Every structure is written in C-alpha cells, then in structure tokens.
Length: 318
Image (tube, rainbow, N blue to C red; front, top):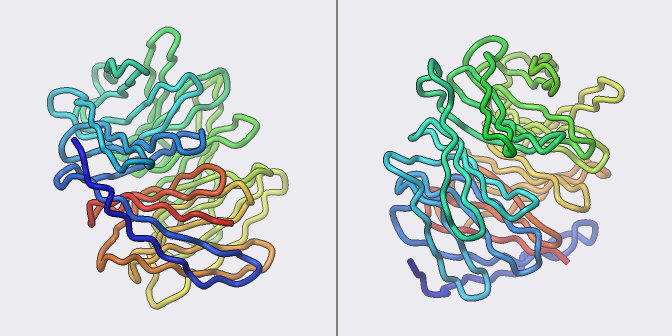
C-alpha cells in the first residue's frame, strides 16, 4: 500500500531549555488503525506499526511516505510491536493469541500461547536478559518467548487482570505495568515470578512504563493523570500531575536526552517533561482526536501513532 507524501511541517515555539521542535505528519491508508509504533534505530530508517484492525504489520518509509504492509495471519489483531537486534519485527497478536515474528525477508512465524491460555488479550513486549522476549496479557498473564528454541511460557500475574506496558532497563531487568491492578512489577527472569511495586497513589492505573538511562522507571498513570518515576536503587517514588483539567496519561517514552514524553488524552496533546526543571511542555495535534497509544523514537526523533486520525507523527528535536 502507498500514501502520498502529504506532510504537515510545523515549527513549534519552545523554551531555550527544551530546544526547537519540528513536527511532520505522515498519513497512512485508512482502515489500518495504527495502534503501536517502533522506529528502527538507523537514521532515516523504516518506522513499523501494528495495524490492528486489518491484521498487518505496517512499514513506513519516512523518506518517501510509502507504506507497505505484511499480512500476519487469519484473525490477526496486533497490538504491540518492537524490533530485535537482528532486525526482525515482533508483535503481540491478540487476534491470533500468539507472538508473531516477521523476519528481514518478511516471512511470518507465529508462536501460539500454550494450551489453556485462551485469549490472553496480548498487549506489549520487551527484550530482557539472554535475548528472551517478555510480554503482557491484560487478561491476567505475562510470559516469555525464547527465540532460539521457540518455547513459550505463560505466568499468572499478581492481582489478576491488568498487565499492560512492559519495558527493560539498560541492565536488562524487566518491569511491567498493570492498568487494572494499579502497580508495576519486576520480573525475576530466572524463575518467572513477579514482585509487585506499589506506587504512592492508590488506584492510579499504571498503564505504560519506560526506563531512562539511569535505570529509573517512568510510569504513565492513566486514572490519576500523572507521570511517575520509580528509582529501583533507592525505592523512591515521585509523581507529577499532568497539565490541564482531568488529565489522562496513556503512553510514556524517554528520549536519548532523558527527557520524558507522554500522551495525554483529555486535551489530546503530547507532553514533554524535563526532570531537571520539573516542567511540562505541550504540543497540540492538528487532529481533533489523535489518541496516541504508544511513543517510540531514535536519536533526534520521537514517533507517535495517531490511532484516531490515520497518521504517524514525528517530533524532531534540535
């Protein structure tokens, strides 16, 4: 599939502390419904997205605006997407109840969950230590795939349903967030057990999580409308209320400068937070409803899927 390279470019006013930001919007074919996004680390490289409603892996070429798709299988409905060190793309596919791998030749291989794990509502995945791929399922599970053997293991999550975002720290530790359980958890990758870590605000709705360069965990607290930071070394928590009335913070991502980006759904804006000054900066989408569900990036770029607007958007920083 192709799209014309109709790009909206804007220069946004920003403080000297944050630096100038330019925004480009890439339309994608209608009906794909870009849920999550992952940017190849190479400058100018492809940007991948999960086309949830059509059951495809989407691939955007930022240089031309061309969008290609790879069919993932019957009844596919992918949610999360990420790229491995060998260039293969992995997706959590709730429709197939499987983890799916697409290699560099665009060959598709599914890793179904073991029998007895009907509809895990697969969400997101991250690579931890020893190359294992860890994933979450909102139905109340988390698990891992061993890419070398193809073995899939599933574990029951503390407090039942809710496992959502998952991410690894620079040292390979893996943490996931539970939206319904309102906690984050650290996975013991040897035993598979998960240790619950409670944020200060009860019922905050920890939705997604990302690590900074120091190994601290940043958490999007959906119910509380807050951005939170957990420091594993000290056990210390900090929380910051997002700007605006009744905020809802969905996604979080930490860029290479350790500034934190978050999507806020009530005002339909992107936020950038500077931990040094503890100040937020706001970027308004050109769409009335963007519904950004994941944020990812590479050096100098932060990418978002606007699931409600059939667009991928990049924020370029200087």
